[in-house]
Length: 306
Ligand code: NAP
Image 1 (cartoon, rainbow, N blue to C red):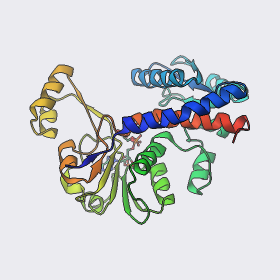
Image 2 (cartoon, helix red, strand yellow):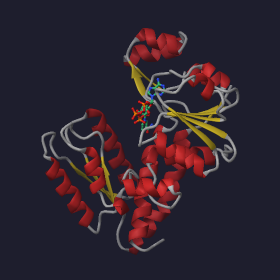
Image 3 (cartoon, rainbow, N blue to C red):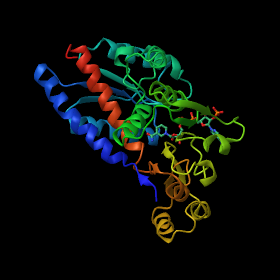
Image 4 (cartoon, helix red, strand yellow):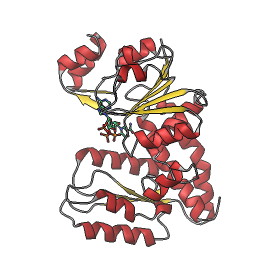
């Protein structure tokens, strides 16, 4: 059976390491400050933001939530960003995506001061990433690197295959792996022979959002598999197929009426891989931890402490 890479344990380590840094900032004058913009009323986004604000509270980071309505104008949101850019006590600005349909999300992300872009999505910061220079990195990709490093998974010289090419996960994680000297292949919906390409991977990163699509034939025996995908399945038939009629999983499905699954078949990955991140409890917990890291680092830079 493959080794489980426990994202919750890595998250706890990272958050513990941040505590003295937050205390040092506080002693130097003020706690780090994070402002979150949550526009409209997307229930999933509300949960994500609640968790981010809670993580700030637990660490002693000062947080505030701005909630423009679903009909707020583009200009109103840009004005809000401009105000937060100017505030000396705000070290990080997070624009929770997706924004309401009529808002140009790229323009809003672009308006955030790159020094306060704790999501690492501003084109300037993406440029720093591509050229391998320091700057805030996107949270989920940098969390993936933390898992690999803290579990001492060798990266240099290994074949890494990333399935998914989004700006938020696929592209940034590919560059982070490249900077760690992996030989990286990026796959997407037009990739020919996806199983064959994936089977070449010593490190397979799945970031598609396709429930349990990658079955055993996609996994090289002994590979490290990082499953970023999160899909909620609501069909009992699908749950039975994915979990091969596991009575325990089907009982969990019946209790909750749904189950969260990744992009990789959970039974196959445990049988074929050498190590893997489970869903839930793998990559997910790292995303908020890395947001906290980026916020603390931004405060340290802005207060001249690093
Ligand atoms: P996205 O923007 O929808 O991108 C999905 C990518 O997967 C695209 O590049 C797409 O290819 C590719 N793809 C889709 N179906 C495919 C297929 N059948 N074969 C090969 N490639 C395929 O998604 P995202 O924002 O990167 O998120 C990906 C997943 O990660 C989602 O489940 C999301 O919920 C999850 N996620 C989790 C966290 C976390 O904290 N755990 C954070 C972020 C995202 P094309 O470009 O050709 O369309």
